Length: 171
Image 1 (tube, one colour):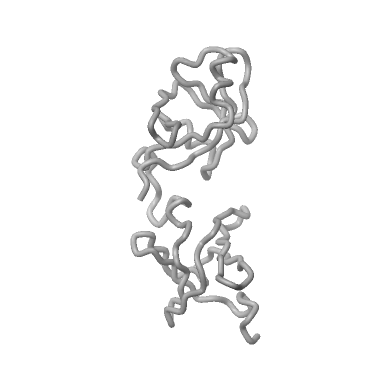
Image 2 (tube, rainbow, N blue to C red):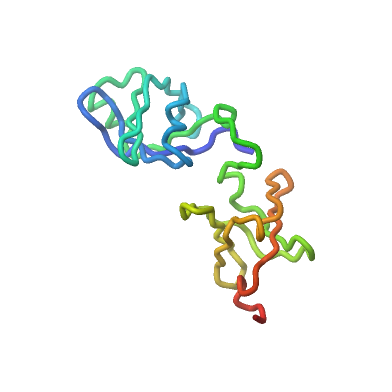
């Protein structure tokens, strides 16, 4: 598993004192407020976080050494990373990056349905975009009646599909 995970991207500046506007890629922009350091360059360069606050759907981020607009502009478009161990996940939760590419198999028969290509949230629950070779993608709701096991360490997610989930099923 990767040590550094993507958490957002700098999309602009805010004010004149070097604050950066960050598009948040985590469940909540509030998570930024807990981090004391972030990274750029895939984790090779550390940034000491001096402050983070939520403004609308963005995070306004202040880092050590960035005190004006020109300095903040050098980060525009760059992806920010966090160290895996810096964010503690609740039991049963996983980083999306750890789910991408996992096999999705039938919980009873072990039939391979495809691989996770994308995870997104609808507000009520997450959705897995299942990539199937030679077949259209399928959207799988992440709800207990369907998703039975999520095991990134085993490389698999096990599901019990509901009727009609796959187009080629007889309904």
